[in-house]
Length: 328
Image (cartoon, rainbow, N blue to C red; front, side, top):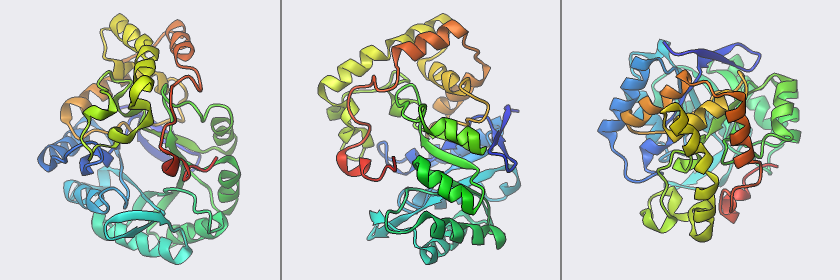
């Protein structure tokens, strides 16, 4: 079985690596439902217990897929899902974390997932129109009703993390964190450790860049997220490929893959960190889990830190519209 870690001080225990399910619903090229289902089966077989989804993935398709795949095996898994968007005609058109909407969406997620409780419920993005105290108050009601076990936030900034935690204990912050994106290190991670909140990094492989599988943005189909990612475009791509060369060098030293080195680096940043690399293929799942067997030396950690320090990656991590949803 896989090593376990605790997310937050409230007692939520999960496998040291989780599985991000977003890519199973067409954000990274065409979906392959048969392989996705096989990947979920294999993850369970190998001991993964944390499965991450959201109402917005699809929208709705991802929760339904996960619900079908995990039917009859609920007691073995921790389901994390997210709310916080206004969805119209199958498209995300803005944020919506009004208390009434929070409860409505939670019921929809429970129905799609085929379960009577959500283990970890995140607010997907801070809603600037709704005080965080009101949103977390509604989430806390769901805990009292037995529909939710633990609460989380995603891409929240320091002020809102503190305000939310004062209403009800927050167990986890889900944010992008990797050698590719280190914006959390200066202010967010120290705050999480002060408050006893775990970190669940998404995109820990830089959307494939740190795994060595990236191509220039124009080589991806329009349905793929990376087709519009600024870091994959033009000169940014070439600069970032050079910056990531140290990951590949250390992978060769371990007879490992670059993805395994990138994940090992995150895992060694703290026992309170549980990355959720996403994949829809069994081969990549098995490769990612191999990172749990690696131990990087202090020298190798320092080389990686120096090769990709905070702010070194060329280009913003999202386009201007999406960056507007990040609460910093």
